[in-house]
Image (cartoon, rainbow, N blue to C red; front, side, top):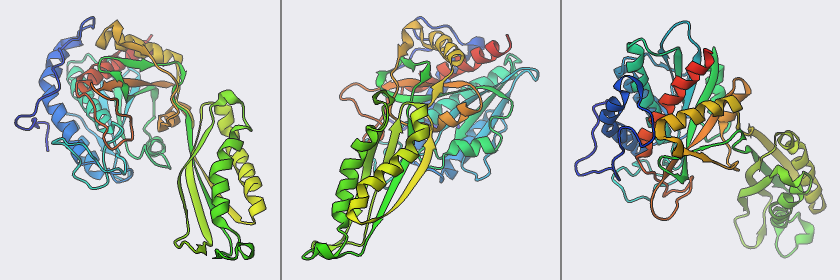
Length: 420
């Protein structure tokens, strides 16, 4: 697969996207024309990635594709140590600052249910969060900025980060940081698909834009026995029921109401027979919280509440609390850059306010080291809304050139601001 990809015969985009949206500013050095020429290939690349998804930590073919495409653009990508992610610097003026743009590249363990020609060919795996779009947008940005660098008009260095393992713990962003991905970086930016916004809109917010997200697993053990004589056993099914119904409510009572703490169990299991009380039970879920201070306290609070609830049952408790990611908190100056970039790329009407989400995003770990911001890229399709992390999720592909224009403008304006 190369950048010569074309759309399949008979395949049409939902509708065309003008080279320069109404109210926007042209990209420098005729990059709008180059983008228009590249759009069919970018759409085809996105569809290829969508139909060949790879789970978190296993993104080897996706990373190889990214490296090939960047090399064809005249760039010099380098693989992360495991070979499932890519970092690529676009070198402009050597005395200029370094600005990073990040895309995540992994898929989710869901079965694709869409009836489309680019449906996932991998059973039980699909791009249900838009990472295929993030990847494609950043490839387009690389192609355009490489042309700009060749003219000597790139006012510094732009680092493209194609990150693995955003959807799991430990987070892939930590691998990138350990591999030197933030070395010399003064600001970092990313976009995330938002099906609640139409194409041409970008959701922006100063401060926290996502929640913190941790994983909680509780394992219960006891002597088990016959359902006819529960008094001679530890009834783990009863204990499990108390755990999943009482603990979430009690935990939320230990913190301020405006912290937005939400503990939800997504998996619970116990037993194999109707007349046997099991000796093992397990429940796992996520804890999400909007407030950073409450996030710091959450492990201790959860552990205490779990012990208090389970103690009367006699079950033995093994609690695994896995730290995930803090909230993404957007830097105000970085949001100023994104606001100006949105107006330039998509027109002033493209700027939209967005609320803080309960979703987690490991982009937050980059912001522990350097200032930056995450924007929400409108990808909404006509018809009933389809949320992220659903097996039917899809996007309006006009969002791809919109995202490319946005991130090119973001890079240029961030470099200019950093030199002031």
